[in-house]
Every structure is written in structure tokens, then in C-alpha cells.
Image (cartoon, rainbow, N blue to C red):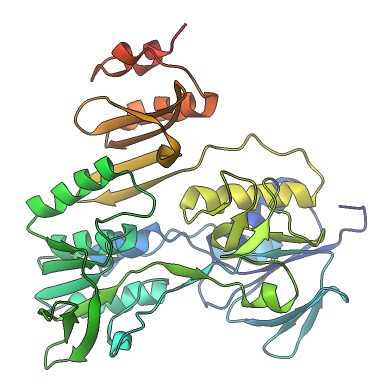
Length: 399
């Protein structure tokens, strides 16, 4: 950016937007940082919503910084929706009619929870915000049963939290298996096993057809006519990237705001896209990443690019999910492998043309940390040594 950089406006005060604001200060920017959020909560991380906040009335999401930090160095405006972006005049218009000029604009509008497009779909509760988690926790008090529609990461984390809270739980997944979008089949089977041992019923290959209110909660009618009743019904069927502002401003979008393979840059040199909103062109064929690591990494990348700083080394994509006291960890691109290698019953390495490009494990934090480094390096492995459960994975690198 040129030396005229005086004000950065960030639309979206979630994890990615808040992290970008903090990174701008960390990297030495002393101009105005305006952070605009629709929610009335200070920027927070989302992992606790489906776990800790459903386990305890006293739990809260992890905030990125305390109120004093935001008051001391930022123009943080909560409950301040943005209506439009005027790229020609370099302005954003707020719902209260205020126009704000910018020298650089960061879009971190994230995504909204997808809604079931079926009769009665509105009766199924969503989980996307801190307020959603508080409401769902309140519904758990006195509840005995739950139906979770969606066998992805969020749906299964909610199911695990419900079961830990003493509810009987049934999970409905329209696809042929749970975790079909971004988790290798072997790893999905590990998680299915955890739920089975805890008494959760999972039905795959069948969709919800309608939902109707009952005296205690709701009844879900499935495609085969089966009716499942629950005191609580939750839908977790993914998110839609919130591209409305970007599209109205004429920025190219496709399942998200299109950004380059580096720096979170868009078609407009003064606009950046980060977090769940960003669809990276040229990165493994193009992808959106809905993870803590991506929110953090893309926020820092945008901050450095805005300030004209060299990029930091980019982490290989990874994520985790906590369920029943166990942690599923995945790194890299297992779906692009031409070979997989078992390292014990719940650890897999994924190779392409002899190089390790991904890993998945249940627990095994130390080995996973090593695997992340090997994936980042594209290391070749000695298959015999790499397949030895309990052996030192660092010694499995082929000479």
C-alpha cells in the first residue's frame, strides 16, 4: 500500500476480522483501524460454541482481546451492520446512514448457517453465534432427547455435547457417511465409533423431509416415513458465505469472495477477503476453509499485505475437532493422495507420488505435530518405519 494509508476499515468483527485488526497493530500500523460488527459481542473465537458453552452455563467463548484493549487502540463499533460498499468513492455505508471512508478495506463477513429448505425447517435450532449457543444451552435444561440434522463437524460436536449432558441423541445425515466433506473415510469411522460407544444413533443416507412442533419439542419425518421426536432439534448443515456486500460492490464471487492464492487479495487492489468468506483461487484448485487456523492465518496475511510487508511462511491447512474427550486432527490434503499408510489403528499418513501430503489421527498430538512438519516439507517416507506405531516418525524420513 502507498504511504497515504491512514484508515483501514474491517467489515466483520468475528475471529478473522478481530485478528486482522490486532495484527495491523502488531505489525506497526498507527493509523485508524475501524472494526464493524453486527453482533454486540467483542470479537471471539467460535470453537467453544459447540463444546464448552453447551457443557456449562458459566462458559463463554474465547475473546481475542479484552474490552480495554479494544477501547485503547481501535474504533470498534458493535451492532453496526454495513449496508453497502462504494468502491469508486472508497466508502462503506452503515445501517445508521453513516458513511466511512477507507484507504484499505477488509471483508470478513464470514458465513451464515444454512437453513433446512423443508416444511417446518425453522423449528430446528441453529448454532452459529454466541447467542445461539446460550439459547441452545438453555434448551438443554430439562431436555431428555435431541435430534441433530447434519453429520458434519458441528453437528457431531453438538451431538457429543448433548450426550455428555445426559440426553439421548440421534444424528441424521443425508450423505452416505458422516464427515463426508473434508474428513477421510477412515477418520470418519473413528468418530462414528466414538458416538456408537456413547450410545448415539447415527443414520446416514437419509434426509429430513419435514419437521412439526410437538408438546415437548419437535418431530422430524425422514424420507422413508420414519418419525423421530426430540425435545430439541438442531440443524448443522454447513454455512453459506456472506457474499452479498461483495457481490453488490461488483467483486467476483464463487462460493465466497474470490481471492488470490496469496495475501487474501481481491480483484480490487484496495480490498482484501479473509476467513470463511474467502475462496482462494489457485490453491489446490480453489477452496474455502472454515477453520480456526485459516481465520487466524488469512487475517495476518491480509494485514501484512496491506502494510506492504513480506508474507509470513504459510501454514499447511489443518483443523481439529474435540468430541468425548478425544481430538480428531487433520492436516494437508488427504483427498489428493494416491496412497495411504496406517500408523496404528487411529493414525493415517497420506502420500502422493511417494511424498506425504496429509495426515489424520485421533489424539496422538505429538506425532501429529511431527506429521504437520513433514507434510509442509513434502517429505518422502520410509514406509516400513513410518508404519510402526509408537516409533519415532522423525526417523521415518527417507534418505
